[in-house]
Image 1 (cartoon, rainbow, N blue to C red):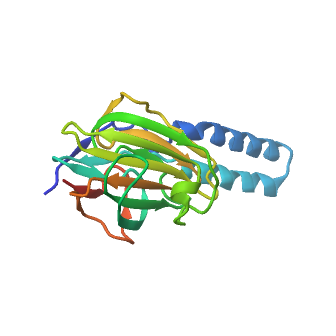
Image 2 (tube, rainbow, N blue to C red):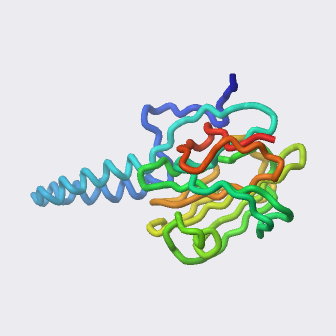
Image 3 (cartoon, rainbow, N blue to C red):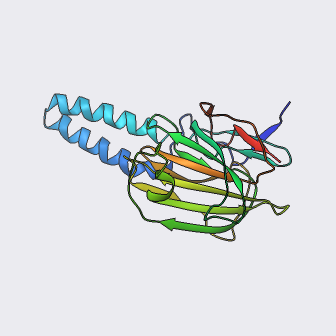
Length: 222
């Protein structure tokens, strides 16, 4: 049986919300209050539903993170749309396995570190906004690539990719940071994708079509 622990202290609230969502929530709630005071009922109701959905979108649930040597967890909630070998990648030398996780607007969008280790690189690339489930999204879309080195020298690349609707990539870590597996490191607002690049010797535990959760679903193990 796989054991788990907390990578971050559990939240003290019943419905934790990511800090990045506060401004959106307050703006929507303020507009809703204005419409209500002006007596524009249908706009007030629409604003109420909009505020509720924004709260839902920016939800940030606590997650128990699997422990164990070489365990790699998903950095994102969503659906696995690709599991494939790649001969080369701009993120590190040599062949590797790429796993792509697509996040719809209904998934939790807080991203988590797939393995414990030290962040060696953080490279932001401006780009376009094609639908995140397309092949060209990996290279053409706006994205933020991180390279992590585990304590035993294994490297893991993970890339936040903006989608058709997503217009904001948030990353709260920088080179030199030492992080735990499952630690929150950022998010992408309103629909997106995460690509994970793993060493070729990794025993992959997921397949195309699988649903995964950030920090708790195991993608593979070496």
